[in-house]
Amino acid sequence: MSKSKSIGTTLEAIAAAEQALGRALPASYVKWLLENNGRALGALNVFPVYDAANARKTWESIERHYNTGWQEWLENVDGGNDAASLLPFAQFGTGDYYCFDYAHAGPSGEPVVVLWSHETGVTSAVTPDFASFLILPGRPG
Image 1 (tube, rainbow, N blue to C red):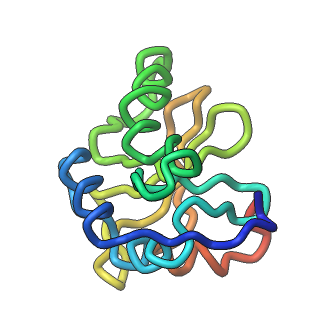
Image 2 (tube, helix red, strand yellow; image 1 turned 120 degrees about the horizontal axis):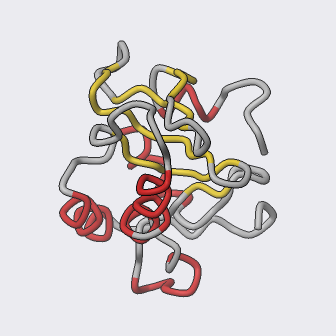
């Protein structure tokens, strides 16, 4: 998937995702989606927003992941942090998620990026925002 062309998306598709999720997406993520919606970061699958113009490539959207797989993991995790402020944007490994943590803003004013453990429900800080995540050395993928 990493060798495929970027497909991008529209502001309208992003607005629809934000409405479905009940929160605004971070500006650096929106900027990335406008040019790269449906594209992976190496081996890491970053969730796209659903875009009817490319439904096949965007079907596994951020809102679909949030409402299905993420909710199933939350039901099965004992302990950990309250996940109400978290919005997963990529899945890492066999169940851990990279999430935007809306309870904590970084210096840019955007939610910090955390890694949520599917085994413990505990988060660990990764970067102060999505733009920093994109250039993180050693990022999986």
